[in-house]
Length: 380
Ligand SMILES: C[S@@+](CC[C@H](N)C(=O)[O-])C[C@H]1O[C@@H](n2cnc3c(N)ncnc32)[C@H](O)[C@@H]1O
Ligand code: SF4
Ligand code: SF4
Image (cartoon, rainbow, N blue to C red; front, top):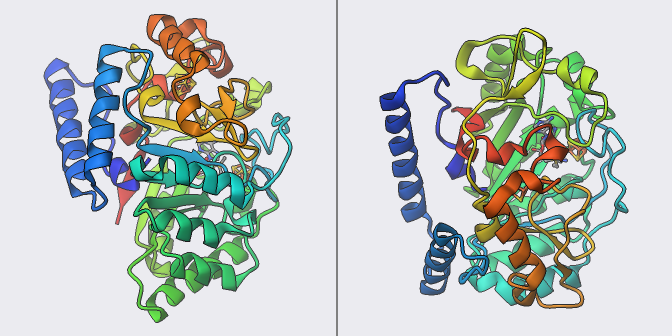
């Protein structure tokens, strides 16, 4: 997802019909503006995107265009243990590994001309892949927008400079606290001092190298225990010289069996609708937001896991639903194979019957309950 797609401020949920329609119109206008502002349009990309959108609108199990967005999990390993992440709660059974340069190139060579955007994530920490700079350069040669999310605990200033010289477009750095205590509460194994020093270095190096990129975004997941630090957080981001602060609403049940522990993370405060969840009087929790009829991501994006497997989305953190492997079959053949088409058909017919889309997330995956641009509030 491009950060530009997340610029919308979240507006309170209890709107009337007119309010909801105005919000939907605003979202549509913003999306259209963001789309037209993208600098990497080409006739191939535009035609492919239009065809994919049309296939999705018609609910056609075959996608006539190629994906516009790809998530490339360049590392499924991580040095931290965040308690609500499948790596932190040990529910990831896949092997921790780095994607090879060969696997990465195979995909970019195969569909790079149609891709608007590559996000170098999945599960795991992208800066643990030692080919990261080469990977960014390779995608940039095809004029693809490249961004990544990171815990930014790396101990390698050369790599930080490499992110700038390789022309990474944007970085989203996870800082879920304005104090050492609250940062290290969730980012278990991380050090507050290290992340601050790395951000300062990135800001300084970008200036020294006279580069406009990457856009430096800080992400703060708004949990119950850190919500009171939001004002401090805005000041911290300003003093560090980063570009934007994105406040993200947390999601739970990400491979976890300990529902009680997870519930404690839900923000209790109501203002700005900062929680994704609502609890009824008996304490049962459900998602905030309107349910969608089908998943639009199946026509516009895909995930390449570290071992080259193709999975529908990031919510399939353990690679349960795999359509093929790019080390054996070119991506373009996998994209419309019988397994992929069957999955699209089933999702359209009854997404609740698919365990990944419904049961694994306590009543539905987050994507089926809200517009992605509603996830974040942005301050700059
Ligand atoms: C699995 S992480 C991989 C990237 C990197 N290791 C990181 O943590 O930034 C993908 C994204 O999920 C975010 N994340 C982690 N725990 C979360 C939670 N409980 N709710 C929402 N987002 C979360 C991370 O901060 C990151 O932006
Ligand atoms: S740093 Fe990212 S990948 Fe690692 S445990 Fe935390 S959320 Fe998961
Ligand atoms: S889990 Fe969610 S995002 Fe993934 S395919 Fe199912 S509905 Fe789409």
